[in-house]
Image 1 (spheres, rainbow, N blue to C red):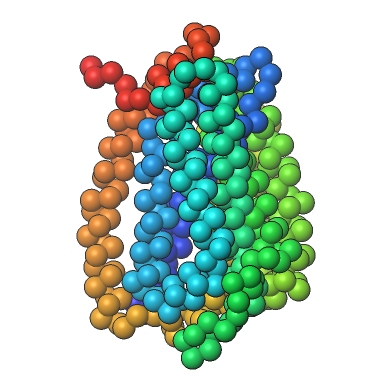
Image 2 (cartoon, rainbow, N blue to C red):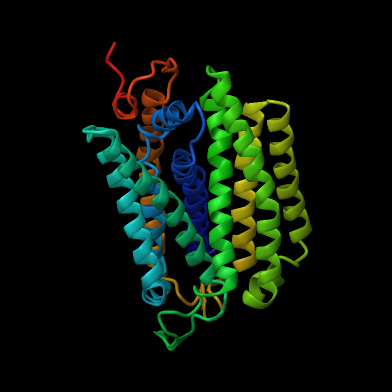
Length: 354
């Protein structure tokens, strides 16, 4: 493996972890917005309890992807950030709105009207941000972003305003909603009624994914022909078969209430989807003009970057393990029906010291 390919593999791995963690975080915000029925407040409080301690840490992986792109593939970074300046800016706006309103909702407890206002912005930005992220990723495969002699020759609206890119955005929203609802079935194991609520949501989201994925695949024939061709290579049937098996296993285990196995299957499904996309995109970074080879930094830079990644992993993974161990350990369910603001405030602060 060349240094450029090694760095690219690290980027794909970081992107997968971001989807599994940050994507579920976005999905939690979606279900917070869609909470209905007599248990709506309790649904919101258990979502806040699940995402509150670790929601900021999830963005570490997206930051890592951007840093690796900037350092390891500067030509691709320049082209992507220029051509997709509008959707990337919208992603940043969505991330800021979502994070700030989550905090404001936690501590601004003046009235229920204020709480609902923060909740609406938090929920809508949880839908909006992954939608635009999906559009951005889809745009890289359309072939409409063109680079000649290291300079961008297409405009600011090329690639991302296409049916295929929008289908990718809708697919990202549905995928993250499915992942979050599946995770929440495990988070609510001590509250069977809430567990059933999230079980139904996970199954519906998983079923909705099927026509959305098929639509994106069919649109790829004309909207992203390189991706479509990549998904017809010799390895594609094996990977698509594995993805389908994971999706079927997730739905079946949800149906049979084997929630831990459902979470494992959902993780496998998302991982294989992103691996398949990466393999179909390879060797292109920005189809068709920028590849991993012709957009890479000098070899010495890539080697130093790989060393930095190895050293950083020694600090990062133990720290994340400690974070999850500290804040995501077993917590008693909160059943007291107080105001929504008081419940969310209590659940998003650190637990009392022993």
